[in-house]
Image 1 (cartoon, rainbow, N blue to C red):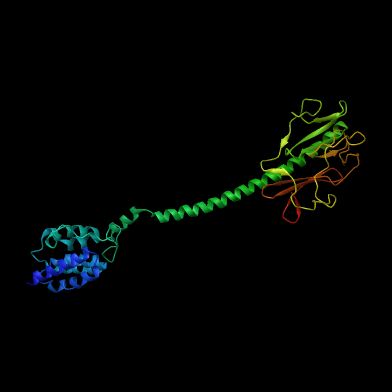
Image 2: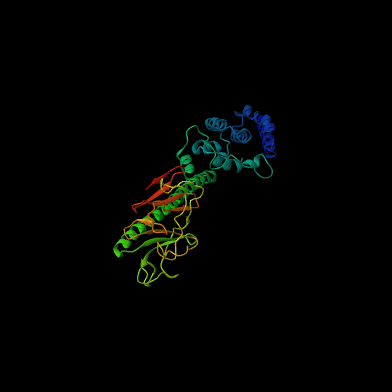
Length: 341
């Protein structure tokens, strides 16, 4: 009678678990241990049922160890759940063994394995086994962990790319400033060597520049390095770096006291400085040197106010100012002052 009652209580509890009422099932399952001396093989079922309803793994271990101690001769081999649970220390194998014998308590399908009972479920024993550790290591990283890593790498990459682009833009505009200053030095030497005038010609619209020397014999400007006697539209020019243009934005003061207010050098003229300077060429700027290497205006007077200004899309600024002695100096703008470089 006791055995029949134990099975009936357990069967009712299992049915309630099936229909999603674990709290009600516990009322029946709590009665099962009262018959453990008469029907010890019910204990494995009771233990797993409690685990499924209440998710208390320690209770299952205790019940299984108790059943092992009783060694009831009527326990069928396929229901040796205690050995499975205690030896493996995992819930998944124990549930599989239990399901093979549930036909004693149910007419149809077995109780569904609980959602938390899978290869990654917590160990039933207090100490994790080697099997547990190996399984966790084989699982690798979760999708959330991988997404976090990708997000962090994306942020770091964005910072690195932004910093690299900023450095590259600053390098380009300073490189253009040094290039213009170097051409002015060459122009001074060419003017002195040929006892003539030389000038650095800036095309403000095309963002190009080139060095010209006055050809006294032909009465025209000749582009340095060009095979023709006079400058042509096909003569070689040097382009500013990508993103760089001639300009000074909203800056109002030049790099030196002599340059005063910001303004590009005077427009280039058709002829040489002096009486035959001729008309201005639109959208150009020129710094012209006489045969002694001094900067002069269109009337051939020595000046110290000539300067060329560069900018880029990131509002970085560079300037090349020529002193009264003819020496060029390159500057960069730090937001409030011009700093030579």
